[in-house]
Structures are given as structure tokens and as C-alpha cells.
Amino acid sequence: MEYRYLGRTGLKVSELALGSAFFGGKVDEAVAHTILDAFAEDGGTFIDTADGYSGGAAEQVVGRWLKNRVRDDFVVATKVYGSTGDGPNDGGLSRKHIIAGVEASLRRLDTDYIDLYYTHVFDDATPLEETLSTLDGLVRAGKVRYLGGSNLSGWQLQKAVDVADRNGFERYSALQPLYNLLDREAEWELVEVARHEGIGVVPWAPLREGWLSGRYRRGDSAGAPGTRLGDTPAAWDDYANERTWSVLDVLGEVAAEAGRSVAQVALRWLIQADTVTAPIIGPSSAEQYADCAGAAGWTLSPEQVERLDTVSDTKLPYPYNVLAANRRR
Image 1 (cartoon, rainbow, N blue to C red):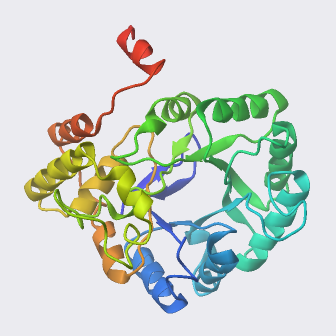
Image 2 (spheres, rainbow, N blue to C red):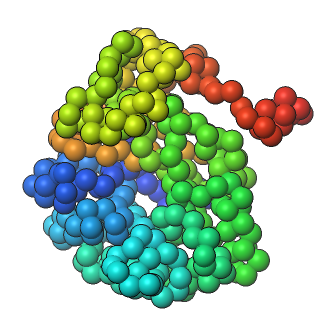
């Protein structure tokens, strides 16, 4: 496993992050700890969780695993936003909810600090100054080391950076967007903001619910029951189209050339993408983890990257098409 700086910070993380969205729910604690053990054995250091995963159980699973490890060897990220109860302030990014949220996450993780604390979704009901000043206070208090944002638009991310800079607040160092070979919309603005502002990109759903795992081929019908796509028919209908099949065709070709699995090539494309620090893998078994882990420690050739870029490219909507056509550099 290789290591990279998170954006413009001095913090190094492994080139793959291990997601825990299914821990404590679909993935029981014993399996989760087996996956975490394998990740650590491979040199993985970057662990991603959230207050809302499995109703908070995911944080508890990660926290109990960390008790048998050297805490400072790992970079643990979690998130705040979602509703944690029935009260009017049990959600969002108000000062009240953020402070309650970080204290609850610290208890569930059974740790003294959170390395990277994300706002999980943009809160259009709370002034950014309130959110960012509260997060800045958590950094100053030592409860949080770095800040990040997830599920933002381009203008929302840029405004968050500008508000932080104008007020002397700690700024976002990480962005967690939906980003993969089938979902490249983040490149239109979010990746550009991240590049210019020195923010590390940590993509979620890098295999797009199994579409890029190698499980599906041109001509297949809807996913089998028990799989992520089989249990969510809309997810199949949204992607079962010619562009997806073309991407899978080229992925298969490149995988055969490289002697790698389709999932490993899809992940490697992201690892090598501009501004990306580490995609978040979300294995639900030791076998899935082993496959994903094979994305680390090697490189796609420039020609292979170009083929994947080309086949996964999408027609740009306005104004991105006009801006691209008139780019002067």
C-alpha cells in the first residue's frame, strides 16, 4: 500500500480507504474485524465511517477494533448531519447538532479524537458561518484534526472555502463525492475546486454498487436477489444502457491486458485520477476486500487510462460544453 498526502495538508493516508457503511448491519462484527485486520496487514491506514451507518453501530464496530491497535497508526474519518433522533435539532449542521454529534461519535468510537470530520450533506437551512465556526472550534479543542465535506455542489464547496478563509476558520481539506467511471459529473466543478484549493478527493461508490466489480457483462439482466443491484431495481434501470456496457467492455479488455480483475482496474483508474487521494472501498466479505486490495501498488499505462477516459466520457451539458470548447490552455 502506498501513501499520499490528503490534499494540501501534511497528513498521509493509504491510497485506499476502507469504508464501513455495512459494518454492524449487513456485515457482522466478526467479519468486519476480519476485513479490518486484512486492511491493516496490507498497510491500510485510512478508515471511513459515519454516525448514521447502521444506526451508529458501524462506529462502534470500528471503535472496538481500534482498542486492540495503536490508535495513532490510523486515520479515522466520520461524518455528521443525519437525524439521530426525533427532536427538532437531531439533524443538520447547526452548532447544537454538530457538538452533540461529535460527542456521540467520540463515545461510539471510544477515542479521544477524530482525524477527519466530514459534513455529510450541505445544510441549506444553517448559515455556513455557524457550521464552519463550530467545526473550527472542534479543531482548536483537539477533538477533530482535519475537516471535510461530502455531497456538495461546486458553488457550495467554493463558498465554504471562501467563508473559512475570510473568517480565519479551519478550511475543508477533503471532499467526499460520488465519483467513478460511470459517474464523472464531479469533474465538472467539484474536482476543479478541489484542484485549485488544495483539497483531497476521497470518492465514494468507486465500483458503483457492483456495476464496476466485474460481476456484470453486456447482455446480463437485472442483478440477482441479495446483491446491491438486485435489491434496488432502480439502480439497475439507471445504468443498464449502452454507455455502461461500453465501459464494461473496455474495462474487461484492460483487465485482461494488465492481468488484473475488473474491480482492480476500475479502482486503479480512480487512484490515478487527478486530485484523488484515496477511493473508499466498501467490501462486505473478506473475498471482496482481497479483490479490492489488489488495486494498490501498481499503475495503469497512460494509453490504458486514455482508453478508459474516452469510453466513459459523457456529453457535457451547458455551460460546461461552451467552456470546454473555448478553453485557452
